[in-house]
Length: 98
Ligand code: SF4
Ligand code: SF4
Image 1 (cartoon, rainbow, N blue to C red):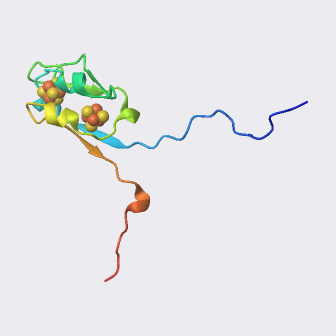
Image 2 (cartoon, rainbow, N blue to C red; image 1 turned 180 degrees about the vertical axis):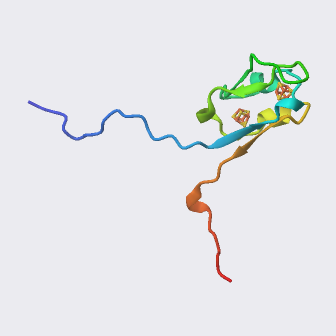
Image 3 (cartoon, rainbow, N blue to C red; image 1 turned 90 degrees about the vertical axis):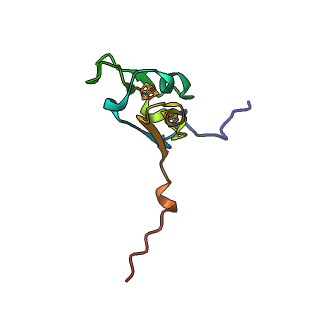
């Protein structure tokens, strides 16, 4: 009887390393929702709370999905949000000499 014993891998989720991070300046936001609409990985939603200007700023609802592509920053008319890529630590070299 043929048995498949070649693979002992369990179906566990691959470890997630965050690729990007998004930064929001709530008080600059005018609640247009462009960032929410255009984020390709659905990281953002509008807050139910208001900022001091009376607008609903975005909040992060799916941080793990952020790639740091900065599309949110490109679309925001008020420079209230931007994304940054997180560099892999292994590639960062620190020259501490001197
Ligand atoms: S695009 Fe800018 S102004 Fe519009 S909701 Fe997002 S952060 Fe606020
Ligand atoms: S940086 Fe890109 S993936 Fe992250 S929240 Fe902004 S649009 Fe979405």
